[in-house]
Image (cartoon, rainbow, N blue to C red):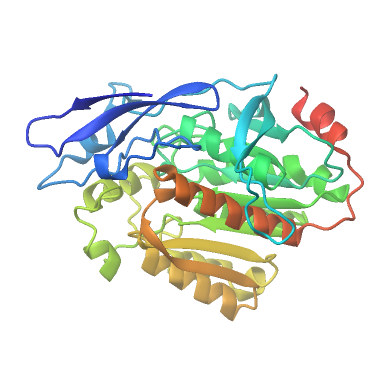
Length: 390
């Protein structure tokens, strides 16, 4: 690991770090006080947890610019990692029967990954993560990454590493959906890709494999739409995981009003992401953004058919007020909801801090294990050959 200082005029001092994670070199920006020497999950993410000072240009902050043809150049994203069919070691905590970490500390589990097509017409695909070992019945987690509908890919380093860690810890097969991005493909394109992913998972659910949908940030909102698509298509899900859903509305909530200079999701950047993602001419009260509009359209009868949900949030996450609205509506409709909305820290903190990443992985793994059953007849070998094609 090496470090050197880098600073733009008038910007807070930061360090440029090189960290080796899962045999890949990654780069991240982090304030010196938050330096984590034993980083397991990659923290190479565009919004680098540095406070925003004064007026800001959201295009510059997000490191994007429009091209003459209307497409977007994204010049500040995290590195794209190749799939690892031969496997890569992932550090996971070893738990004893009593639930405490074993004295030997983290151990390494090899996770294989492979890219497979989802829709040739849409140009979408899946990155599949399969842990090595003799697990007889692996659940399937269909995962949607974050990035405000505009940034990142399934191969982006922080989300690749998040999925690899979850696959190793649960253990589970994780299918990370490489959905289409806005503004080249505005909403509902990502939701349509989510529906394709649900149909891809249908035969595995029909064969008795426990299937979950999960997303982080805007990916949580996509996962929610995927769950509704599963309900409509008759695909059995065992659970839904929504990590800090990216929601909005025309009228500011108290949390949004206080986020003008948020360290990760400042209000001007948040507004721009919605402007780029929503259909042309739509405002933030559109059902793709505002949970109240969406819930009114979905209706309680459809909501109550959803499986158990795990909803995670943080005290300083700008959309947190709207997440509570969603949780309350789900509970009112009779959905079994486990909600932890007051986690310490800020938006996407699990991508920056190793202890938060470990806590997040443990929460999700516990939920997946509890809501999986022993009724599946699919063996790990079937997963590797039939699903990952490794």
